[in-house]
Image (cartoon, rainbow over the protein chains, first blue to last red):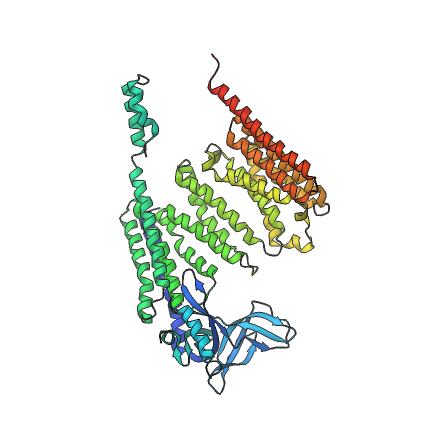
Length: 184
Length: 427
């Protein structure tokens, strides 16, 4: 191969290598700036990723909906339209196999269908919140301690939603960001 | 790394075994051979350094510096990437040495991975590990041809295998088809390396790494019909054995010929597993013949047959050597074993027995202790396996063990005597 060709291919590669992370940032920033924020009640646990570091895994209280339709396929997309309750937490307004046009919605994934209770169980695409390695486990403990106080569940995730995409911005315990709460 | 022989040269000259002139010639030969040794060592350290720095960067970023603002963290995500790209660009433009190519390629490899990982961390993007690793490998693989870097090829193979394993073995029923493309991408590089420097250590590494990667990954394609795995692996090991007998590999030492070693040992292990009657208890259904596992088996079988025909035309098949074509017999037994698994079990036991005996014969003919004892190990493994599923009395089992033990001693002793007789001919 001639050096000119090698250099041209290399330049294309450089652009591709820069484009992928840049596109990831752009997509997330778009949701954060243009999206609407919702609070999702959650329960954190602490696992770890070999490359991305420690994160808390978030189990959401909204994880199923009553459905008479028994043909839900595991792993298939389910669109959840959102509303907020009196306390300002996200609730399921309706759900469907197709996207909504008149409401904020999130594309989630069907986990399984429970025939006994006639409920479809699903998971949101924002279950991982990355934290400082020293704080991830502490966060789980802090959540458990916060649970034992007077309020029922005061841990929630702040999620921005825009055109079906969702970006997890932060996790709060008693309205304090979890990273700050742990330091207390 | 000097040769032992060159240390002996002064002594040989003193005792008038060789002339000073010959000693000088030998010394010059060894010196020329090792001229590039320091360079090679420097390259190895270069790769190791870049590897450690790259991994270190990933770990440091994984710590999650949460008091940095998001903008600074984003900038940090791009920093190693841009440094890596700069180094690789400089290496290409200035046509730098192999050390530069290997080290800068290795560093950029990890910089790309750390960059994507950090962005995912900053924005809490959850993701399958397999998708992340696939994106990473695809973004780096052109470097193989741009830099002609062996380290990048090794990393490419390791991480492609990692991608396939994390996707295929997680139990969600998805086969890692992209692995085949990732593998095909490195093949031209490997073939050209085989042609240029078949005896080099670098090629030997790939002679092991490539088959190992395929062995690890083949299982990830087994989703609905796991039972096809038995037949697919036996065919695969047959293919590897026959690849190892191609002219490009046949003359290599065993330690450089991963294909023959893995092919042979793999065949024996698979057949030993299939020599248990209980394993044959499959439930066959018509859906099997429409599955991708069945299609893959046919493709592998066709490759195996084509390879065998090629070897036959080049007169490289020793017909006494069952290892060449045992996979053909096994496929017939496997599919006929659907109805009669007792017969299939008996035939597989006979196949292992024959492989053991043939290996012992080869070992004895070549006066090679390694091969001889490998044959004996095959027989022992077969006997030990049969102890688990037969109702033989302890006395007979004991006698069999003693018999095999005596066999080990006698065969090795007889061969040692034969070897001595050849090395020291009678005067």
